Image (cartoon, rainbow, N blue to C red; front, side, top):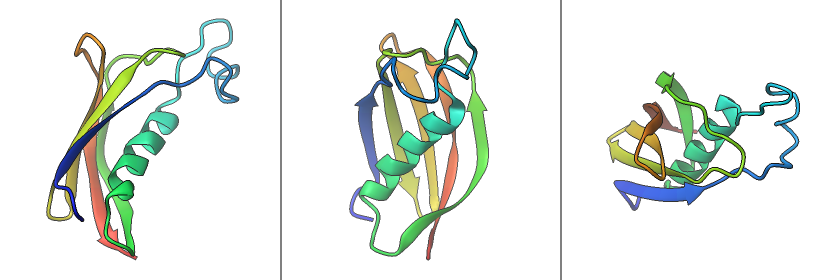
Length: 103
């Protein structure tokens, strides 16, 4: 992996197809969609052939709303990648750990 740490800002559009069913009338971004963004950030700088082999720990602390800006921050030590997802006010939305392995 070329980078040992990084960050990435994102938001999920209000018209994303997963939102209408994820609490109709008061949609929140599904955790799996947040994790997909985290994994994409990590794999974007991974060595060819590396993959996410597990998610030993993940906590969702606050909801992410449609169109709300969020920032993923991650740090890799060996096969372990620790991450956190924050809103624009630096409130922690989610945190956890990924295990990266060769395919």
